[in-house]
Image (cartoon, rainbow, N blue to C red; front, side):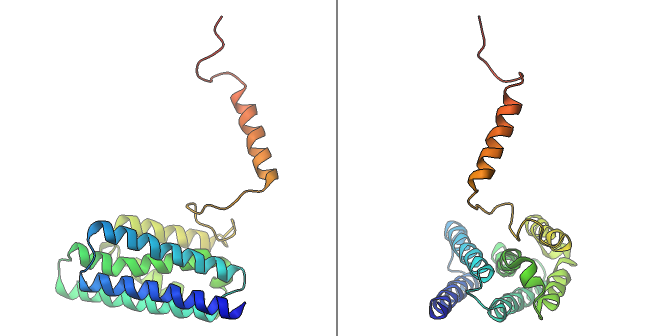
Length: 193
């Protein structure tokens, strides 16, 4: 079990490193960048799920967060000293921060309670304190992370974008609610005479 988790962690880290290297070298075109970003975000979501299941250690998760935050902080500092940022510079500083957000969101309250969790959240908040440095999309994504953390990750540390299987009881409850609201008029078409 542990060897499998180590192999997955190693592979996920390689995916992140390869993506970062391609970004920094300017090798990615727009479409490749989007596909690569989705692949890396998927790897981070998977790692977070493995962490929730106890297959990945908290120290490994925090090491990954710290590494990604370091890359993002360096890119933000470089952009601040160089002035106007190109689209590639913006992606280089935001991609690692987006990955950190995904790891922290998926790790939820369990990761926030980790010994290094408070320091990691402070670093994210420091980057958020520079709103002109981040895109609106990323600012709102980080704000969602802060709000969920403040509420104690009430829905099991999941993002609204996460697709999780529902229980049969949940499906029946939703179907019952839909039938109740749909059967009281106001629907489209039908019923003519």
